Length: 345
Picture: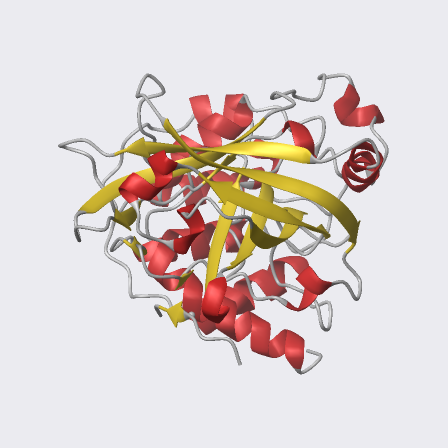
């Protein structure tokens, strides 16, 4: 059995606020409000909220349910090795199992939905070590605390009369949880990517890279497509084929590999390392720590990525988490969701 380090266990990459909530709704909400104390939410409560909002689809993920499996390799650079002693940055090719997905627990969601896209990676390092990365195509998350995440999932529950979330309930949830406003505002103006190969994927959380001298470095990373970022045209939101993301991925890979450069951005004094609702300035310099090449993809049913629990706290030596409450909460929530999938629930 492969050995790997694993800090606490994980809810699949986070759920973007549904329907972006609308610019008009955001404008009507106060931009700051004191947040009341709430009891700590438990992983089973969040999983139950996902099941209540999206329904239970036996044997499938509770979040990011619709996806495509892929495979390839990663080659690190000396710049990456200078920041982290992880074998990921050795310069040797590292096999990768990948999964591209849409946020949410609806397996029939159209690919043009105004929600986040995800890229989850399992790097298969020497000596059986594993390194996971779970990312979104947006730079910030919609909650700094599990209680807020749970409340927003509950607020997204479809109204039986319309089949869509109730705007009044969403507005009330945002008023009670203003930390969610930053992502909602971002999503209101964010067009989905034209394909997975044209999406930039962000770490969302802050991590620690540990170098060979035991020095920690606060970092965020993003995977930037060599094909270039390209959003859907606004007109395509209504006309794009229902499952175009998988179709375009398979078509593009028939022409050759897709590649993303891994940009690493260093933290600076004053950064808050445990709040994923806060973005770092775009003006900061970056270092290219490696390149991901995806060479093959396949529908997820029965494929290798389907059975992987992409717990973001599965980490090899040289990469460590921060004390981000959302990051630490994901692991036990993922584990619960994964156990239900394994038992056919």
